[in-house]
Length: 512
Image 1: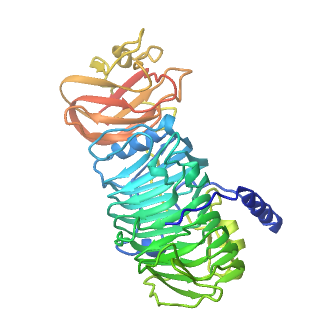
Image 2: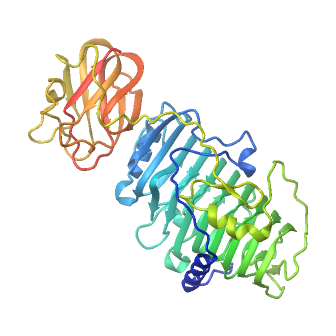
């Protein structure tokens, strides 16, 4: 296979300058919860809803994301994880549990379903850290940036893919994200958006893919033909050598995308793949559609596309460009409804809508960006920093206490003495503390209090029925936690992440 050449990073700077010259002024409201609904092939096969209907938690580290997955009642319990800040190797560790299968150095969505990951606040960035989906279904990834994920050099993650899917993945919607590298294979990077080994019903929408040797693929080899039913719409591909995308078998619907500076090839349909390519805008690029680097031909249906300063190579062995006057070689029937913007306005529409922190704006099909209504989301399970006033009897008073470890000068008993000026701390940044009774006691509410002046150090946590191992609740931060009334003899507060050394002044328990 022909390998991509080194990137023309200077060209990317020039293209960016052109974008500024257009004069489009954008406001940048921030998403606070999953918004809009899936589009394209992600609406088929039962649809893609992610964590809708489940609890919402907030995470600022990769470990906290894993802890949220592991804290669910089962691997299919719906959950929305709101992500803030920078997620990197230093704050992403494996977390174990019956509802997850995670790993160090990668956000691992493996053997799970019904999950939404959405960036909130001032933005969520996965820095040199990829997102890996394997044996999973009904996943939404929205409003985040994934950058500089490497397969060689240091650090490495996810085989060098920004987002990679493999091994029986179904119904994934990736929306309003930026996926970017800083070079090609020789600089240690691989693909930005890869699907292989039986991945189907996927939509990539309103996203930016840039500065990479490889935009992405469907199928890892000419024999990996079990993938397909993928929609790409309203995306910006910029400063890419090839694979925008590479299709091996299957069906793809590619519409209203803006392609700028594709240096070697663009949409590469091969090994029997069929692509419907309509109303896209191709600018300053080479060989934007065809079959390249193989004699295993693919097919395309074309209409409404604009080719602005596009050059075409001569046809020959392992090189079958669709141009200079592309015509259809197949027909593709699309099973879902969609609205097409005219190709002439695609650059402006995509510039105003694609990527994170654009208010999750979408096109209305008439070249006018719109802000979608937010999807109704349940309140976050992360409790408030300041606990509410108490009522009822604190069952921890007079009970026993133990834990996984205790830092020098602290005591387990300090969390049940009614004095918030004394505390327990683990040895290190994680650990667990328990309240226990001599017989089963009914509990439905817990309040975790941090000593004055130390608030905010507790990160992701799980509240566990120590008798059975069942997770009663999960979230982040100190405060009030409510859950279904449970009779137990021991309840454990497990801290999975923190900023610095966490302190628990009081671990209060209540029957109601």
